[in-house]
Length: 484
Ligand SMILES: [Mn+2]
Image (cartoon, rainbow, N blue to C red; front, side):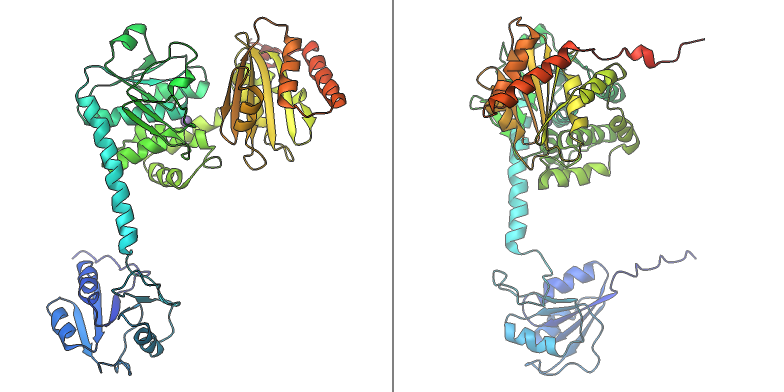
């Protein structure tokens, strides 16, 4: 004979329900349904009769005024089912001391007296969770309806596909495939970051650069993790926009879901998939979680309750070994010496580090350096600037506590180019029209620190210019061992 599984010692083996209101019978059904033994102590003949038919239920009748305890009172937990606070207190007085004393009244809007726990969600709590699910399901239906009517749906990512955009695009594709659609996932830029290449290789999904034929041939265009305002030219007119960046006034479409309070677009897609009971397989969970992790710096930045819920759910399904490998691969080998140069040539002013690299091979240098410099104690924000593609690019990183760097970037540079971001990360891109790199130092300093004293301004400009005129980053080959 097979040994019976030992009962979980942390679970009570029985509960005691005391009282006579209409909560008694449903609670008895609830516990008996979970094969728990139930003791009922009641002053009501009617209740005694109503629960008698349940298996595994023992009933003790006591005086209807509950002045005295029954002769043998079982151990806690106790659930008191009466509607008068005074009566509940009277019963409580003859119970042994225990933290496990619940009160189940019919009037669930009334405040629970102190010392009693709540056993079931209140109707308001329950209603809230059901209603929000119904709202989310309505959204999923609206999205699915669109793909059913489309011949060639296209999910488009703006620029260099980042993890959040990839996760969100895969999430939307999964939802649309379930509805019978065959969406393609495309991006407008190039895959540049090493980690993103690693992720795309591992996913083995046909995610490629978009062609102009695909753009003109699609009858259902969705953009994720971006808005049409991101495009500098040839702005698309998507039917579907799903994003978490601050809403641009011109972001219109048939289906627009923009949630700036969310840490990632992957979180929005995780909600769609979860409410509709759509299977999230290991690869999809990994992509969504990586998107959520990289946009929120592992929940440290811009993460809200929805992000935490999604994180919890995805973590159980994702490939954590692969994620660990992705997280460690931060700095590309050929950029390491740029990062080293940036660290050496920082200028420290109050609680900020400023670096101007001059010409950079890729703006990623700015991102990598800013992220690293922000690890410094006493530094609350970092600005790393460089010239790339005839534009001055300034990358902002901040702790989100002392100031909003996205707003700071916008205040400084929005009039001159594109600028903005979140509390903790911002970016500005300003055309420099072939100007000498020395001019971009002034452009950076004067817009960034409008209220700086002239003396300090002169020193800062001079210091940054001297750095530009000194030796540049080392050659990475110098660090490598020669082959035999
Ligand atoms: Mn994002």
